[in-house]
Length: 253
Ligand code: OOG
Ligand code: MG
Image (tube, rainbow, N blue to C red):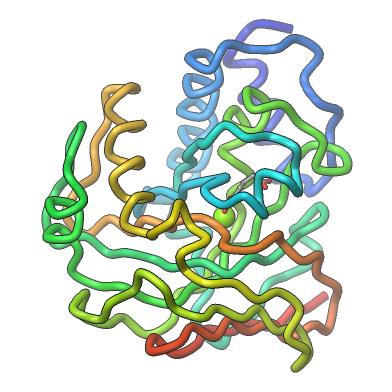
């Protein structure tokens, strides 16, 4: 199947029905994959969701190794994906969700194309500890770079903790992902491309390749610092980030 609109409809349906589909049978080009992603988000916006920013994918070695894909990518976030800090994720709406510890940025200025790390830093209005819940629509999280980009880079939900001014040095902060009080994944924010600011620089550059840019107020998730952990009903999930505090949610049926 290479009709991009049908692939988008298939992926949207898999997300709505919370049922996994096999990896796409044809390998799309990266350009086609981002076109599918855009069509896919169109299904969500027609249902009343609003885009609130983007998430970067595969910005750490641990993440690349876990899914065996080493091409950095991005996906779109909507208000329908937001879970309030301390809130709940509904398992019945998920296929096989996993949580990963991230650093989130909120922009006070727009960013477009190739920018320096300093320009990216000056655009940040807030930095926060965050958890991304990814939920690949593909069976067993098995995908190529093109498949996962078409599937909106596995975007499913996000929880953002307290916002801080960007004058906190976030280059090398300890990050812990806890499930039911157990620290399961531990890393430094430096695991994100050596410095999380590079993820924001890359976001601006990669979006420009698709004719898009970051707007004032956008949230950018910088990517998981560790491998993602699978979730079960009843789990209480928390990320703690040195100096930035924590964010948490629980998994309801
Ligand atoms: C792809 C999405 C990767 C991240 O933070 O690296 C991602 C996946 O692992 O399913 O969200
Ligand atoms: Mg992520």
